Image 1 (tube, rainbow, N blue to C red):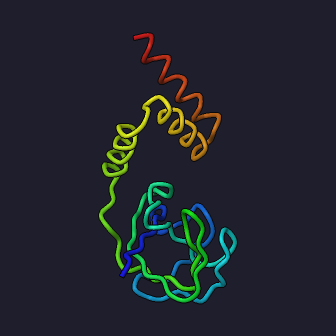
Image 2: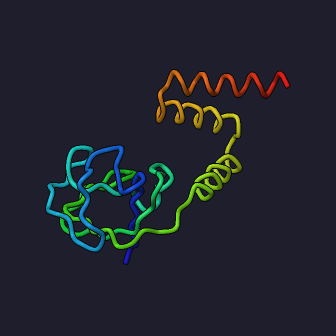
Length: 137
C-alpha cells in the first residue's frame, strides 16, 4: 500500500485550489478529478519537494484519479494525521537541495521563489539589501 502525503499552509490552508478540506479523519465530498481544475490534489510520492509548505500530512485517497508527472487529482481525500514538519526541517531540506546541486543556481531559484511568495518588489529589495550588506562589511 502506498503512503500519500499532502503539504498545506499553516492551519491546513492551500495556495492552490481547495480550501475546504474535510476534518481530519473524515472522507471528503466527491469531486471530479481534473488536474489543476477540480478534485483533491496530492503530490506524486516521488515529487514531494516541488510542493513543500508549512504543514505535512499523511493522507489517503480513493475513487477516480488522474495523474501527471508530479501530482494527481483524486475523487476523495482523507487527512489521516499531521506529521512532524518544522521550519528547521524546511531549512535543512533546502540545505540538502543546495548540497546536491550547483549552489549558485539553487540560490537564484530560492531568491526567485521567495519573491514570488512574498510581495515581489519588497522581497527583491530585501534580498538586494542583504547582498549589499554582505559584500560591503
